[in-house]
Amino acid sequence: MPGPVVCIGGSLVDELFYMEGEILPATTNFVTVNKTAGGVSRNIAHQLALLNVPVELISVFGNDGDGVWLKEVSTKAGVSLDASLTIDRSSGKYTAIIEKNGTLFTGFLTNHLTQVLAPEHLEERKDLLKTASWIIADTNVSAGTLQWLLTFSKQAGVPLIIEPVAVPPALKLKTIELDGLYLITPNEDELPAICSEKAFTREDQVNELFQRGVRFIWLHNGKAGSTLYSNNRVITLAAVPVEVVDSNGAGDAALAGYITGKYLGMEDIDCLKLAHTLSSQVLQVKGAVAKDLDQIKLLSLLSKFYPANE
Image (cartoon, rainbow, N blue to C red; front, side):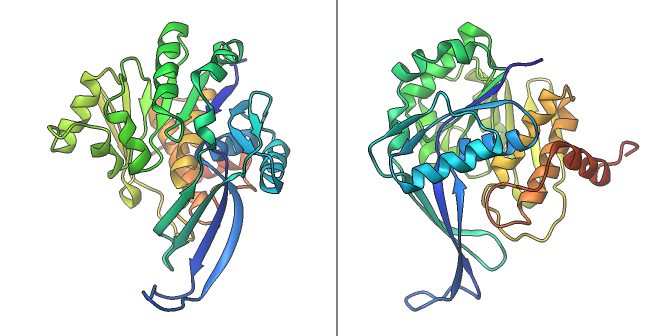
């Protein structure tokens, strides 16, 4: 049986404000509020566990009520936290305003805990990391930690995936040595942020990442679907059309779906189909995880949205 997927990065409390109407600046707006467990790596780990994929989360939790709650939610889902840390600080929080059509208006992040995930902590977890089938890291961790993971991945032969998260944290990838990185998963805004100013077009940006040693680039294009680039192949897949309730966490879900496909031995195109299927379900719920979806239900939806004979 393959080893666990090890997810490294943020665990946050998501506090999401859903607009009841159009946003009106400089005045009172009516909203509904939803509190959920969040953080990119935690979301991915949570969803993988629900899909019966063994997963370890290396993250940092605050020593407060929110931290206790985040750990309870994660372990109840089946995520192992043995390699995570709890420190005497407040838990991180992500606050966002969601427009009536389900898209993100703006978000606010207060979280410095992931900076504690230094290379020294990962050195102590090398035995775990060597058993991993995949390592997923988000860019909430420091540039030094990402560079350590890239070096470890090459030496140990464990494929590493980096999720850029958002434009500001993705900027640190602009100057990091990416040689040997298995997969990077930017959206249309994040792709230019991780490339040099010389790369003007999408083709330039993709080629630059190949030249820097990245093996696969998975570009998320929102409603237009996504494209998986490799040196000798390009796979484009349309998105599953759904009525969007909340776009928060759709990219996290897509990566969880892709990795589930890999864990089940699927080809790249089928991994993309599973990714889009899972993402479509998260887009229809409030929060970043499809909590009522197990592996059997997901595979059933895959057959519905992408019939085998098409």
